[in-house]
Length: 390
Image (tube, rainbow, N blue to C red; front, side, top):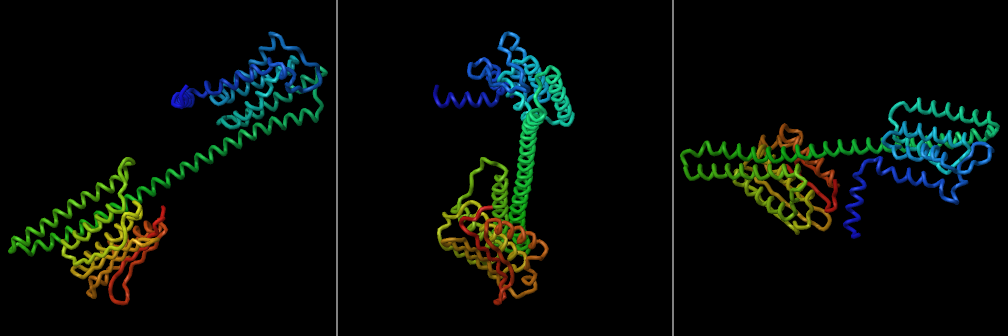
């Protein structure tokens, strides 16, 4: 049989019903008492002589072993039948190796029984006391110390099952919390990208449209301005498609070179909106991973958006440096007028973008600052490590 055939068989086995998957263990325990070296290895409560195996021994053996096939599907029924089979095994004196089924059933019931757990414990304890008294009445009972010791062994098996159940529940809760956190993180990321795309492009289109109102007497300039509005709209659609790709696991990632080209397009679009922008790029953008390149792009986008909104017409410098350990992005906008004075992180419309941007950069292990410097320019600056990971 080839490796592929084995994998297919293993996959089919995992997909089969749980009773089918538990049946081999049940059959193994049912056959164990008939194996020569194991015929005298049963658990005996008392000192009565062991009865030789015969056809009637099939009853206690079957009662103890076969219900194990349903130990996960119907744990209470399985445990009850195994306990009855163990009692019959002790009272008839066969004392077979199938007695190992009882602690196995207890572990499974402790792990998989969801309801009436206390009633099961009380019922089994009462049944165990009744079995010990019945054996004592027949004159073959175990001394009190042995009865208590074996009960503690059975209780330990039940506790192991309870521990497994709680561990499984804790792991399920942990995975649920991870799933919730992941969904919230993705929603936040998508919301930030939507904010960045819509704010920047709509701001540029508004500025271009406002300028076009004063160009009605200059058809050539008017046509150029309206063309710029249309180009900005097309770029907005392209960026929105990239944001929607976040929802598609099969979407291709954007490498650093593509983001570098997108940066140049972003700068050119801002220039068409009437903002004088100087763009300087240093280093190799191919080294940037998808997350790092996208974060650098968003920093530039937010800086240019603030420039268009709060300091229109003022000179803006964009400097992106792909260094040995980090990517450094700096967007500086000159301006001494009242409109530039409002370009602060807490300003309406700008604060949300800068706040979300800072969270994005910090999640990658970087740092971001935004504020006015001594020369009067408002500067958005970010440092993002190459190995940054959210």
